[in-house]
Length: 134
Image 1 (tube, rainbow, N blue to C red):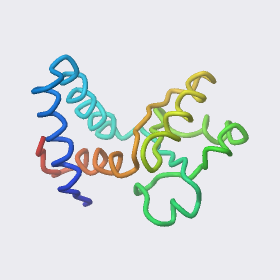
Image 2 (cartoon, one colour):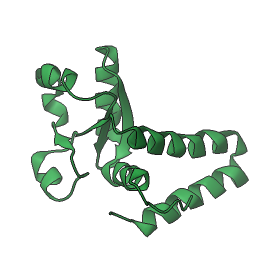
Image 3 (cartoon, rainbow, N blue to C red):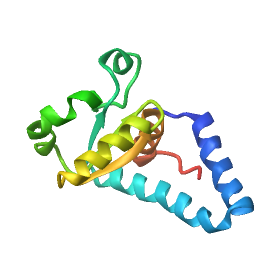
């Protein structure tokens, strides 16, 4: 099982920051984390990493498919054949946001997961026996 204590601390710190400084956003942020973990617990999800093949080779979510952002329009049939929802990720969230917007306009059930390390964290927290630290 993958555990990233730095990311866990970052998520906890962000929740605390939102509660303290931006209480109107705290519920949304913490709810998103719980919702993402629930999506992975369901097991009916596909993860698509939209980074370049070289970036993907440097580390990725277990079981994810690499479809670089520039190939998304040409690989719609492959994307439609994946389990739904499709969670998209990249290095920091910029490319996954672009891909999510494009795919949503095409009618695909998709979610912007942001960074692949964040998606990896969600997946690890959904695994049986995972510690629930936030």
